[in-house]
Image 1 (cartoon, rainbow, N blue to C red):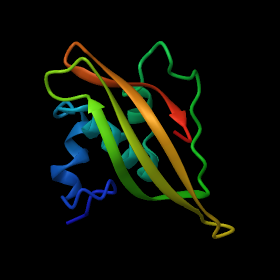
Image 2 (cartoon, one colour; image 1 turned 90 degrees about the vertical axis):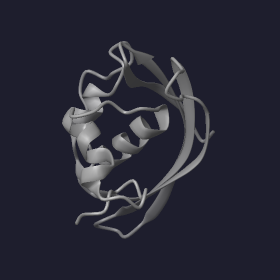
Image 3 (cartoon, one colour; image 1 turned 60 degrees about the horizontal axis):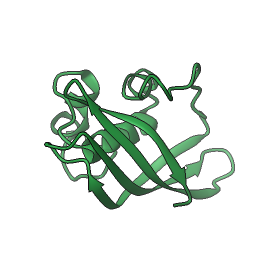
Image 4 (cartoon, rainbow, N blue to C red; image 1 turned 135 degrees about the vertical axis):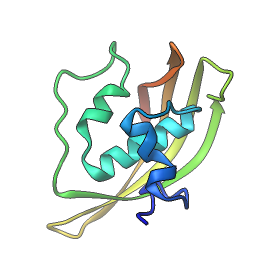
Length: 128
């Protein structure tokens, strides 16, 4: 059993795995945020692009192979529930450099919208 990188406590196959595989949509903005963190942690660029709103999605997305995404802490949510069309998730994602062992944190308030039953990442304010 592989634990989900988003640290929900669930196995990957019961948490972010089915969302990333397209087997079920993320029911909330937080669930999509967790799946995106898992995609960063596992290097799944395809899911990051798929879950990014087309109006803000970058043309190219290269992940830094030197960065290990280690921990996700959800600080709070605003809307983003199963009956909402927009929401925000504030989180801190912790990382460590493989080469230098340097550690860091990314603090962001991310914005999401739900279109055609699918949550999509729009953008975020870093250092929120």
